[in-house]
Image 1 (spheres, helix red, strand yellow):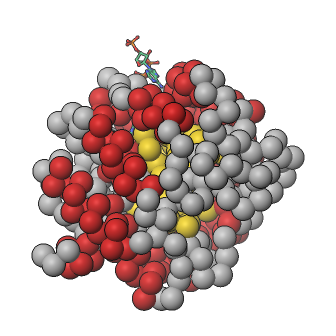
Image 2 (cartoon, helix red, strand yellow):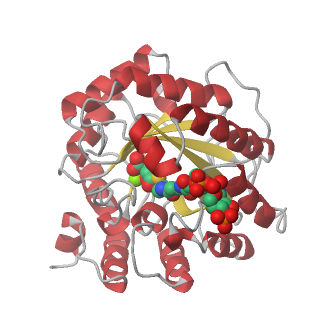
Length: 343
Ligand code: HMG
Ligand code: MG
């Protein structure tokens, strides 16, 4: 993705909801995903195959995946739905559902790997072999972190062990024709180790994940501590390590109100993929005090002001933000969303 097109990955159904204490009915989650699928979005993070003891709210992700596979999409373009998997068990739980519906989703042809990741990996809807319009892509996301403390809290192991587990997930997913996103959390600040996360460590972990076959590195500012200078420094470190902008997505939480500032720094650096959450929902259960992702509505309004194209309908998104925040009893955290809805 280059030029004036920006890819928005809507993470509301996963990052937005995972931290909610009250169980949200499966029907509401599916309703949210179906509404989002009609806005022009091409990428939706839909659930998480993690241990239910750790994140109870995501325990019904199997039902979400099954629903996506059962129903033909009304979308004009095939939508990529991603699911987190922390280990082989998570991948296997997803695969057991995918095996029940082997022709219900688009896969990618196996691609020869370049030394630094699968540089020829197609973007959904672009170069994959004749993708069927009404079939989704399914993607898996692994989630590493840049500090040992956060990795222990989030995954109950050290970074090295987490990477070994992710290697199994990545290889298994790629063998099944699934695209793989690889998060690196706390890349711009850690709730336990502070602001000074070493950008070279992030780049090192990114290189490892790309070498394992991940298609994309997703830089997580879990705590929202990132600033314009720290974002710039991190992207420079990634560049110095030979990681291409096309292989990077940015995932900003807006805890300190810096997400749009960090977004423009990333855009200027050449990044064209951004995660965001409708209504600004979200937070990580293992990152104390972390608030929601940057609101999709705010990002859309901002990108439009720059003349950049996303293909996503801002007004439709604002309505969904009002609806879902009301549904789960949270204030709408999107400034643009509230303004558009006349509040
Ligand atoms: P553990 O307790 O060390 O693992 O957790 P275990 O192997 O001892 O398993 C414990 C229990 O979970 C066992 O069940 C396993 O079978 C089961 P029991 O025998 O006790 O009944 N289990 C599973 N069940 C379902 N699916 C699985 C699975 N694995 C084990 N995949 C583990 C280790 C990795 C499982 C755990 O730490 C975990 O699930 N962590 C996930 C935490 C999480 O989801 N955090 C939020 C997502 S990350 C995030 O939000 C940041 C992000 O947005 C980016 C950013 O903002 O930076 C992505
Ligand atoms: Mg997050």
